[in-house]
Amino acid sequence: MNVTQTAQTLLSNQVSLRKVDKVFSPPGKPADAVHALGPIDLELHHGEFFAVVGPSGCGKSTLLELIAGLSTATSGEVAFEGKPIEGRIPDGVGVVFQEDASFPWLTVSDNIAFGLRRMKLPPGEKARRIEKALAMMGLVPFANSYPAQLSGGMRQRVCIARTLVTEPRLILLDEPFGALDQQTRLLMGDEVLNLWRKTGATVFLITHALDEAAMLADRIGVMSARPGRLIDIVETGWSRDRDSRIVQEEQFGAITARLWRSLRQESMKAIGKIEAAT
Amino acid sequence: MNPQTGQLLRNTLTLIVVVLVAWQALYWVVGDVALRSPLQTLAFAAKFTSTPQFAAHLAETSKAFGLALLLAVVIGLSIGFTLGASRFLSDVFEPMLVALYSIPKITLYPILLLAFGLGMSSKVAFGTIHGVIPIALFTITAVRNVKRVYIKTGHVMGLTPLDMIARIIVPAALPEIFAGLRIGFSLTLIGTLLGEMFASQRGLGFLLMSAIGLHNVDLIMTLTLLLTVFAGTASVVLLALNQRLYARS
Image (cartoon, rainbow over all chains, first blue to last red):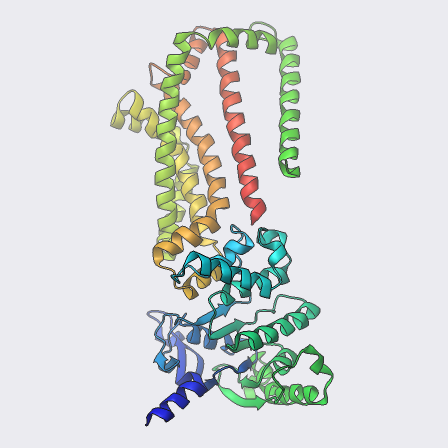
């Protein structure tokens, strides 16, 4: 492979998963092993917005944990920017979880500063980045409040800001709006699109909401019931400056419909309706 | 002042008034043989607390209680964090701790006396065994109940194990640990005083026991009042601190 080709691979593929499998086996009881995921092959391109939808329990979150280095693949290989991830989160990756992970014992700005703990930055640069993250998430008036004084949506913003402050090149979102109401979710979706445009980072979003995936993503991976495999990848073709108003477009309905066509069988399997047929 | 502290203050004042009224009423019913009125007690207490004799006994009890509390907190927290961090260890030892908690510690007193001898060390040991178990039990639960997502967040931030404990587990578990400390505090005080009452030549517990022997009603009332005021004040202060910790989470 010559230099240009290598550079191109690096440019286009930020994350690559090859034949990744995840099996959970309780120690000492190999008979109870659960094949949670795989085999999965997936490439994430630099700067794209990739969403994953799938029936509940299909291993979506496991997939995210593999990329985040929170757990290791049973077989296969996960690489970030060409380097294999081995049970340790790589620099340049930020994660936001579904549950409220803001620390109640720290103020909003201390929470955000916590994200910078492992980076060795001069104090001035730290302060500048915290200011920027506060401003980006609209948290400036709450800088000295405690999370208990904020609404659920605001607390989730704190978590996003805590990730943004590290200026990640890849942001992993694990159903970050799952606990919020529908209207707040639409607006948070707009904000995530905004961030994605401003930061130029790659976004990998796990969600169970088909409309959310259809509205936000460039590409959507559809997962099967357990063991989770990618059964379809849908390209949405939205322009980069989209916002939540695209829900009125015909294309939006078409994408959501296609996602559901792929998912319906799998979702029924997941809730045990057509167990016998498989 | 926040409304919660205000409410606590109101409750405390109500309690004091109710106790004083009940006390006075009881005094009218039972009379001088068994009781002194609140006013008489206060007058005697004011006189008694300025004697050097009282100061010496108080110093003895404070030292025993202070040591017992220190040991109970250090040992209780160590056990709590060790067991709380390990599913296996807590599955094995937590039931034992709970069983031990329900044993009246007084049954162990003869053994402690023989092991530690008369005096300071057996008092401290008796105070410690009262306080250490609730502190350990509360800490185990507190550490185990730390939200999984906080730990995951620590992992994705690449925290070292030490940072994980100091920056995430301890602050997240603090409100619940503090509740254990509050209970451990009062039980350690009870244990220390009991220790002094049965096998000691010094301290407030000893003073109380000898006052009972001599039927010195003034002294009995005074000591009871002083101990009640101390334990009550400490309890209210700790409760207020605890409420502030909980208010944030």
